[in-house]
Amino acid sequence: MYGRPVQVSDRLTRSDYFAAAMAILAEEGVAGLTTTRLCERLEVTRGSLYHHFESGPAFHDALIEHWEHELVPALLAAIEAVEPYARIDLLQHVALHADHDAEKAIRAWAHTNPTAAAALARVDAAREDALARALVDVGIAPTLARTLSRIGFSLLIGAQQLDDVIDRKRLAAVLVEYRAWIDHRRTDA
Image 1: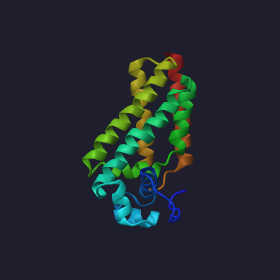
Image 2: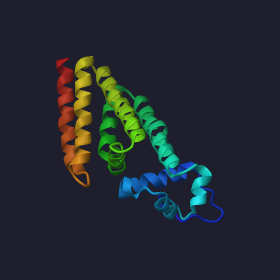
Image 3: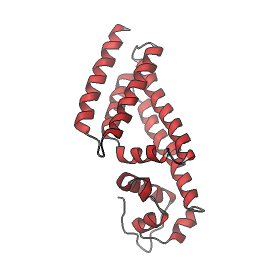
Image 4: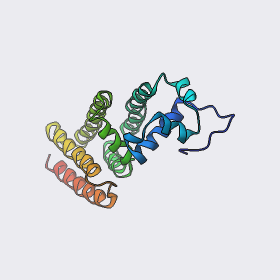
């Protein structure tokens, strides 16, 4: 649970800091992700933070690295572990139920932070590639699969950016139409 009180006997791990930081990103955006705010949330001193990370900027870099190399790959591995139609269903489910607020904050952060921008570009490419592979695996020609993947990913990013809070009902309707379009293209392939 995010923001839980820390007992004297508790020993926070780097993962605890990352989880709290992702919650702050989701709730307050990148402007809220300060070392002071993070330590307040975890009810620890800055010394505790600096025990795990050299500095605030080092923590930010480690958070982006954690997101790119731990959180996203775990999701992609789970998606790759199922058959192609189930992959598309799972990707659609994730698109609808993901923590869009944290990702929206990371996207905003990428406009001012080169480390975040580079990681976001790699993550976006990996996600888009995962969808394109699933589309190819269900019988869509590779060139068309790449195009459909880009369209689908653009729909998701657009939905994240349109409103302060993502309209999940509207996104669900768009994803249903997108899936119908994919299924139609598959029968044409």
